[in-house]
Amino acid sequence: MNQPQSSNQLEQVLSRLSDMAQRDFNLAVAIWYELSRYENVMKVAQLVADMPDNQALPKALLIEIVRAADEDPTLLERLTHLLQRASDGK
Image (cartoon, rainbow, N blue to C red):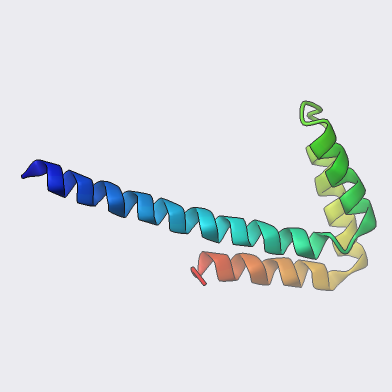
């Protein structure tokens, strides 16, 4: 009798992980869409992708995102809204 219960628990866990992965993927896509409007952010993001071993580039990407937010205060609002929706599970 333990086998069906364990199988059921495994299915539930896998289902929850799948839901979480889909939600996180959707959040990542939405964030990427927002950031893709900023040319300098995209240039540094491409460098991060091209040189994943360069440990300085992720920090440079964050700096460019901050610069973009300084130039466009609505970016911060939009990103905050996305993160809030994700934390609410929507």
